[in-house]
Length: 511
Image 1 (cartoon, rainbow, N blue to C red):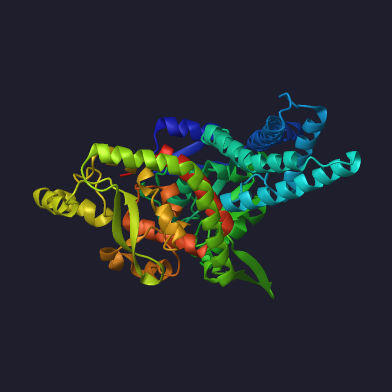
Image 2 (image 1 turned 120 degrees about the vertical axis):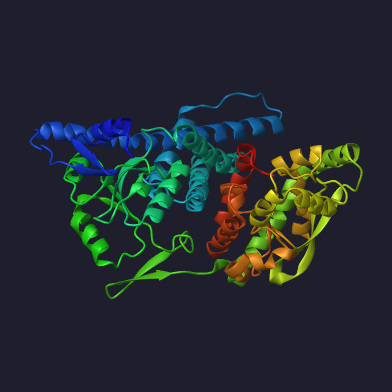
């Protein structure tokens, strides 16, 4: 039930008297007789508040460009033995400001953030174009082209800008003032709960529901999601619009339902921005394109990973990034191998049979993190502790696994035990990003996702590893893997790779 504290907070947020009955809010008509000046002031204040996240992200971009340019100059000076100096000149400030302003034209400063891979794609392409333009202008103006400085600045910027954006969103994304307030239209409790959970876990979207509009469906205690449930007519929606709340989220499984259509049409012109969450949100969404067929909406989809040229592109990306990463990771791997030999008896590497591309069997390599005779130890442990059998059957893992060594727990928690799989990538058995390799006895657990799984190479990291690690069930992980395959692109791979390290550092639930 809604408590008194929540009641006071809702009343303060909506600026109107409210009445609570059976966890449902009924709003009384409100007085809208205030002067135009007062209403304009409220609107401007709200607009300024909504623009704070955009200004912070833009400031992060500006600073990232300055840092990238400064690092490029310092590296060039060091390579040419020139005296090191700071280069925060008016010209450099002007170039950074121009590039930041130009990002606005590709819609990366919109009130509602784009998906991570799409944002990365737009920023990368625009940064590349802008650096080429600035380099050309410099050449024609001075007659010389410091190509190494511009190349370094471009490379540093591709890292600094996404990193700065991620830092700002991580720092401020969960603050009350971050994001646009919105009204969630939903007539299904499961859909409403899922949308609210997703928005709270992804502050980068910068949208925060302040209320749920049900449209008259039966409401019970399950609807207590920490937000007021607005039942029937809500005159306060008019007040909310005047206060600058002009965003609505439609999350209804059946938009063709007469009751759902009537609800949308009733408030259609009350909100400037609408976000529609279709029923098949977990299937195709990231690269969905819409078209028009004589008044009908058509959605165009492409299985990118099933196109030969795209598969070849992914393979080239795997090889290039693996070879580049091996330069840094090889010394770390040698130290881990030495530590394993000192920690426990047995080989350094462990090869396990897995099912991969086209359902073929291969040996997936890992640094050994278990004791010898691990399979026998597991069977004995489950026999002695039958209460742990359910956890094993559902997750195929145990939080307190008796087979894992002391060093092995550290390797698993940090995912360093996965490093030898880079050899599997070079041999063509795995990819850097993809669904996790399937154990031979897990075939039936994949259900309908098995057909998707066998169409691609399994990966070292993937969608669920950077989203939830081990906090989801095996079935949920396979669903996330299917989502990745359906929505693949080079930018999605790069986005997942960029999130892998902070995901490993952030989560302590890996086991």
